[in-house]
Image: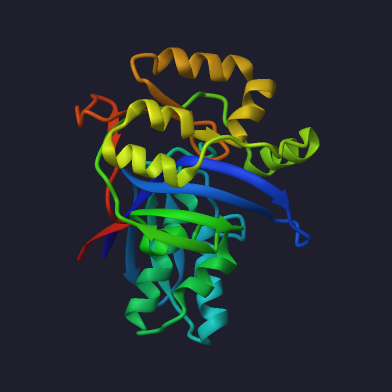
Length: 268
């Protein structure tokens, strides 16, 4: 089986506060996009993993963690031969690692007819629960509270700088800079994007991490906006460092992607 695990963009992302458990409460509007990682899964007698990336088969790999969480939660021992081809840039805020983990959990839960995928997803990573159902969603808490929304169509152009941002460091900077204010409203933004009201959408787009990047990596932010200057709607996604420009006229781009309505596709 080959699974295409699709990336996401954050159309809105506010980091609200640090929790007692060390995580952060967020408020985000997420949407899947057509950029993807390809995961080939074969049942095997011996577990193995290979990738075109530098990922190793250890706890730093979300695919590894997903397998271990599934085994721990169900008591089922798995032996998978996994080939992961990364098409989603790492450390870019596009959710590739979380998408891959959710795809593996989906496969295992379907194969062994096991419920509880959302609980398992929460144990693997904060963004993983979104990728269980995917499409479009309002995400709250540390990522576990998801209100599924009707997806919509738009073309986007991505710009991924050579400089990448580590999520943990960006959260550290948010705490250090004490950034707690936010602007806009994600549901107002959602309605504006659905109705293609560009001005209202522009007024409500916001990303806390972009505010951090403007102060910490100003040249990266400046270059991103220059590269995407033909777009009225431009923002950094996730904790960065990727930026997207959105076109509400459905016109495609040579190096672009689309908003899509699902988190994965499967080829048997």
